[in-house]
Length: 175
Figure 1 (cartoon, helix red, strand yellow):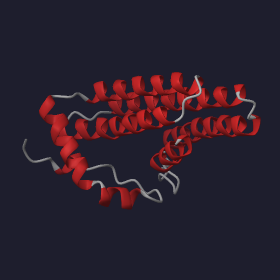
Figure 2: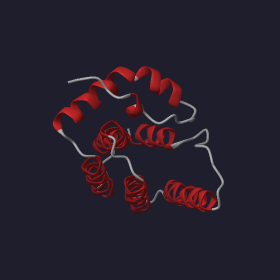
Figure 3: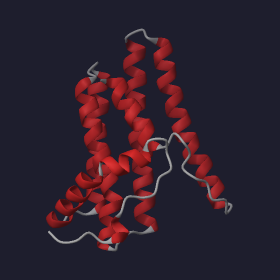
Figure 4: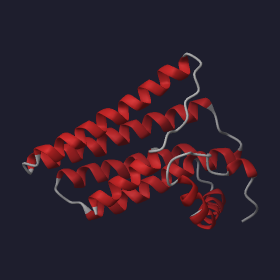
């Protein structure tokens, strides 16, 4: 299936567990990327597939399921990791693609955390529901603050509790 270009490496994220994930998952990452390149997968298709998986996760959460949505959330996370990698490997990464991916990530966050909020509220778990709603608000606020800062020329780093960490905590919490 060929060699993977150096530019297709995962982004250098600085979260708490990112270095361990990068080291432990390097082999499966390369294999998955080779497979996606071989199939002709396009970055936007992977982004949309991730969104569709998150829609299913949200529907299942509103119906009270937890384990199945956690597994599907893992699938959506894998797709989200590979959309940018495929774009870089094919040499077609662009500001439009990064914007589309970022918007779909926020929509996915809103769907999943909103559905979790609703599900917990219906179950009478108001404190847990408030935490889910807070997580949603903070997720959207962080993205907005980063966009505002970057529009003014500031360069912000990822932070200690990056998207990968938030994602893993959510999957563990659902299981």
